[in-house]
Image (cartoon, rainbow, N blue to C red; front, side, top):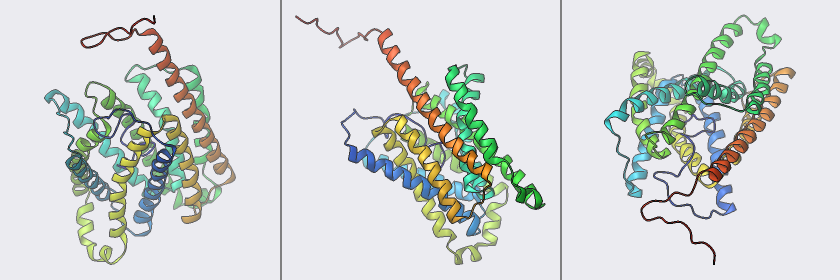
Length: 358
């Protein structure tokens, strides 16, 4: 899919069921990180190109096609790897279906947002995801966060406010104001869904169901595909697409959609593998580098304009997001170290205490 703050289904684990850890070379790490970075930037920019400049204004249809490609990709993966798909118990299906709704909405609204606002604005607003995750975690799941982490999100909020502050050009243009307002509302909703998806996917990956990422994607993709297809039919996207099919077919839009569909699965695959061979801190830093590159590229390709205050806000958000990422990973590592010191070694069938040195 094309979602996730870093562009993946969720964190942790291996590709499917999780293999034993093996030493990974620096070259392998660099290869997967580069593949993830190129996929992420490429899909973001191409999605915008297709919907805004190739007149393919059908975000739900595009999202449904992305889910079809992801489902097909997982089918090929499990067929070639010989790995069996995890069995879902009857009582787990309601949770899985509810998550698929969030999953589908997150992707669909995200693609809609990409067609309505500049890429720079979209990327900066996505920096608010840690704030949304923190609010949902505390209010819904009763989680606690350190004072340092709470303070670390304040510069992110301040930076987003500066980055989103309208310039005089948009204020003086009556047609730009309503468009900007609708785009901002959709993008804010997109950010809220991204935060909710991150929290719920964490529960799916580590909670009662404990599905490895690619297993989860194989279940989510067909469910989300059906929901997006129904939405595209209900909102008239399919009928509009059929009516304009001849005109769309003559352009390059269909080729662009096909490339983004394949790229969406490639992005998920690279994200999962990069998460497997590197550390969360590395991916967090790479995500912030990705933001810088996308903002720079969109300014050149799409001629996105921004005031001095907006540009300063971009810089503040990127630096503050990097600081937050480093702090959260540091706290997570300390928590694991403390847990390892407190918990005694597990003893059970087939296990024994280590022998004392002679």
